[in-house]
Image 1 (tube, helix red, strand yellow):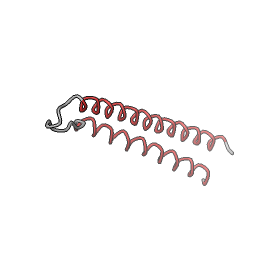
Image 2 (cartoon, helix red, strand yellow; image 1 turned 180 degrees about the vertical axis):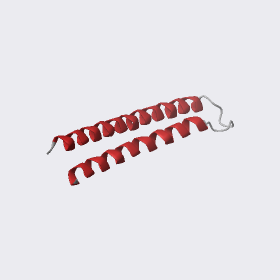
Image 3 (tube, one colour; image 1 turned 120 degrees about the vertical axis):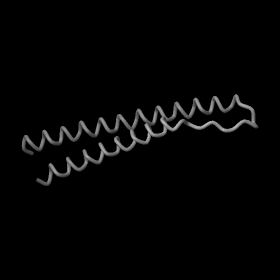
Image 4 (cartoon, rainbow, N blue to C red; image 1 turned 60 degrees about the horizontal axis):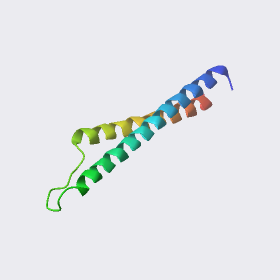
Amino acid sequence: MALPALFINAVALLVACLGAALLFITRLLEQRALADLTAQSEDRAIDQPMLFLDVRTERSQRLAYRVGFACLGLALAVSWLSTHL
């Protein structure tokens, strides 16, 4: 494997690791938010309306998931291209 292909694969690995870390952190934050919401809901009376996550939190989680999966897809494409060129 030539040096440029090795460098391109190293960049692809870095992008993949960053994307995976973003997905992992987003999932942890989502679980914490849902656990907090569950704890708040248990203290409420049965006739009160349900609690939901706010729109900003849901949008930020959705954006983080999209960026994380885009990073993984980009890393896969770059790695595949470096082996075929």
